[in-house]
Image (cartoon, rainbow, N blue to C red; front, side, top):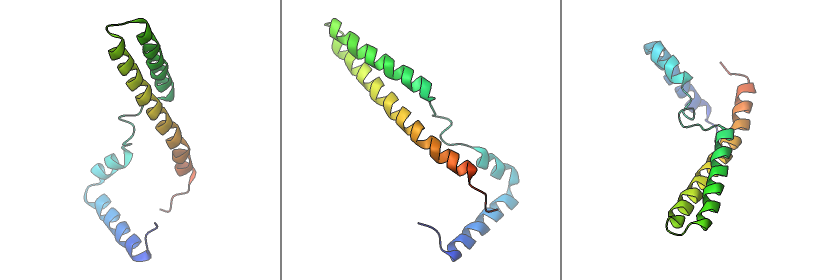
Length: 104
């Protein structure tokens, strides 16, 4: 939902004051990518996905430890697949944002 004209003016004023009061902190905050800290490259996610499948498949050959290995393998598969999908979905959006002209 886009901001109305009054709300946009208020937001612009807050941003302007933020940059005036502490320009060093403002530039540091602007350069932070919140996803970068926990980002996982798609290649690494695929490696973890294959490792999870291997753990799940190896669980059928063991008896005592098989259930634990299967659960760990399944969890690794779900986590890496979820991470891979999120990373691939976010890439086109980030590319569109980089190409969009700034309204500064």
